[in-house]
Image (tube, rainbow, N blue to C red):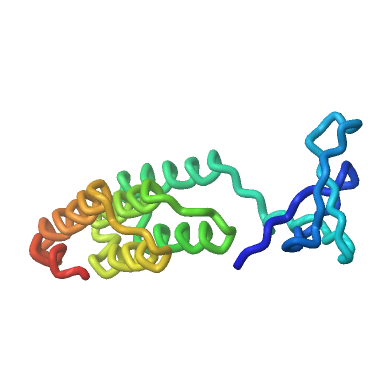
Length: 164
């Protein structure tokens, strides 16, 4: 079970509440919601910040850039998978819309022969590994990949339904 960390006064230290032994009281003199922890254990240090703070704007900009390059034929599946690796390595919490954008970039790259169905499946597997379930936009993007590959004779629409 996870433990709850509460701020201790204005010092910035944190403490772990103990079951019945911890007594919390609100400091009425402090301006903020400071809580003191009265326990036999010393306060814990504050939690570490993430290794690298990646903001949503940077992730969005990289995804849009990838999609634009893929639409012009200047990006391929390696670029898609590299961006996926970059996001996971930097602790970006991927959402379904991020996976949709990656699959749309795969579809655009597939029109120029820069992606295969196997590349799209790798994106889907990363989604499953994170415990997410594909939604309608994800499945539509996967169908776009199959459609782009079908025009090149590299896959058929029935291939999309064989992915499980």
